[in-house]
Length: 540
Image (tube, rainbow, N blue to C red; front, side, top):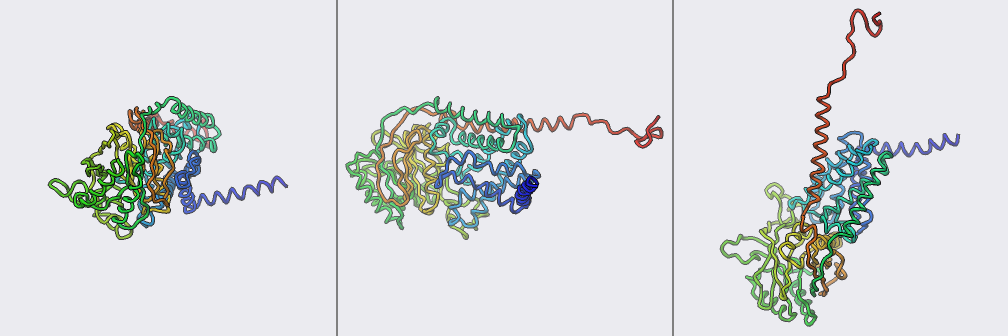
């Protein structure tokens, strides 16, 4: 009797769980929550150790979907939850449009949900388990690649970026960029899902874990080390939350004066630190030149104004630009960089004729900024060459790679996240510079108006404490410089190519099996009935 009652006691919770999963709305909510779980691995929670298992609940849910259609729906709900969780700080600015964007981007995970069910469903054997360990990370990477297109929001929240403070992951990034880190993280999640759900697949699952450990160990021991080439003293000026362009300029000016006599090689102001076109306000240009003479270093500012790319002369398209401008003791030095990759809805509205209504429900850009056309490497006094990036351009691996190829010895990201104070956005943004440093083998300075400002060495390690969102200060960092070329700079996005080949091979194999099944001879049908014999009266 005790055994019977024990079985009944355990059977009831299982039946209740089954009813929850069978309910379309409750299952959708669970999928959305499971998809949101990986967001905890990013700053500000920064539970980086959660990333290798954060996808497992979502994968187990899609694996057990009763139909392929339901698995695709689980993929969409999980993608919706993931995008909302990673970008929830946009809600005060875009309101309901944040949910619309998350829903559209969530569709990218529909094929991934289908693949999870096909490869992990039932009791996969060794061959299917090995295929899952290759195909599912590759499919995830394709989702990251597509949504990294600038018009779709850019590469914010790539799973590999959650490992920004893990030295072995940074060493992987020097080999294959953030893409290789994402592949390894999803491969570990897939192996854990197999260990939990498929008894016959434990051997390949363990083999997959061993392969990831071996790859990471190989990257750690054999990745080329950055060759030290001295250092530079770089000052970051963070004025803090101040209303008004003139007041912000004045605060930054006062903070910069305190740097005199500290042997600074470069002073960096944040994005939109100058709110007027310097050609139209020569008084501001003179004040910046005076600061350069006082400090003994060039000052890199960011001009957010109409005509900031050099005035409104012949051949200059009208409009507002965000331009990095280097100012020396004699004024602007001529080299300037216009931001190329603009923030969708924040700095322009994609398909404004169709989506312009977003400006009425949130803080979408009322006027599109003018886009720059090329990246620029600037030379600072003393021979240091810097490559500027503006705002969320620091999220794009290819931009830092191209600047490094062009000879930049220091990458400088100028940013402003004042609209998102008190959210996860400032910390998330600051963490991206660590990946760019590791990928390029060059130090990165991430300077903001209101925090978080940060500096990283050429291996992605911090080169000093962060300037938080509560700070109004000018801080000097001793930045280690390096030469040499990382494998990622040399070979580019090769993990993406490998993932495409894996998916192409899997698709070709599936198509070949489908064709062979169709062309195979059909088994003979049942014997025809005759007057001499039938199932009821067999012939004698």
